[in-house]
Length: 527
Image: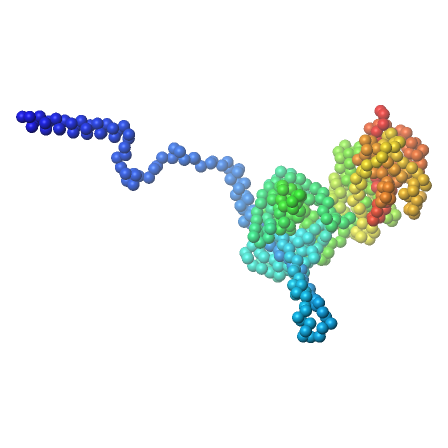
């Protein structure tokens, strides 16, 4: 009986233990399967949902892809190299007879001359191998190799170069090539999307595509090697352009080339947000002449010009600042001068086409034919608008038309300044600086000896240089001839403070031809 009780107690203990075990396991949520037996996790509660891009963004991305697919096969990689002249070994002891002289050959003479190499970009403008690029990509090189997007390589020859626009055309011997479609750069709008395609840093990053917007138009760049005929009318973009991109296409969102990538503005020489391209309308005009004739022939009015300032606009009665001021004539026989144009006239149109800045005038006139007649519209003081018919001459037939720019003002010493202009003057006959100059009567007037650094002319005029490297002479004030200080006071008598005053200067600058130009600014003095 006692044995039966013990078995009952033992059984009860085991049951309680199992019950406690079940409760314990339920509390810790023990898995009923091993991890290997569990099915794959299906829950997406912690996984981020795909980004739902808006359709315009998707369309823009697809447009970029399409442009790249269409244009890249027409872009080329250009490698250039100069010819290496063979050099004979230099000898330490040339007086020794052979074969003993070979033992004394200067080892430096055996070092081969290293060829100069370069690289850049270009793009096919015709299926038969004509390629547009920058002049600076090919200038000075003897051998040109062109590699296409499909890997084929060709030797190229130069068809023609134009240094004044930095455009060149080269050609490879091939057929049925994919070429680009040229757009209309005049219709470009600031803010419009563009892509730059080229070969930054050479072959390693060839056929690179970068995107940006048109940041500005009509940009003037004072690049090295500019001449008086150089046309500076750049499209500014923030699409990344680096060394090696030169000559490659700038393309709009429709896949049309609107510019030729040419320059960057950077303190390091690498992209820093400011890139520049030559408008394709200008490049196409140059390219057509290069293909047809191997050179560019330009027409000219025979004038020297500068961009109109706000003072110029007010002086001739323009509501908006724009136009081009005639500074001087290239010669006394200038066709513009014969037609009746005058210094200080503000050109606002040629053949009815508006002229807003210097590069526009250069392009409108420059690519017409010498001998052609054009109608030049100018504004004169008092809001007087006049048209003149000018027969164009070939550029270079007389001294080139200089795009004049004011000299940087130089610090001046204290002195007695004329109040309305803030300058000190003396007659040419009293000027030591002018004593050795062979001045004509038309060039004689008042030498500017000092400019008040706080006066109204501080940003427009500079005083004669004590080293006689710069000599400015005032010949006219508001159209009146001045030769003496009395003449100057008489010409300024009716000018009130704040009014625009117009000065005509004759300037001599060291190492450059003498020039005449027009300067306008607001008069000072008491109201």
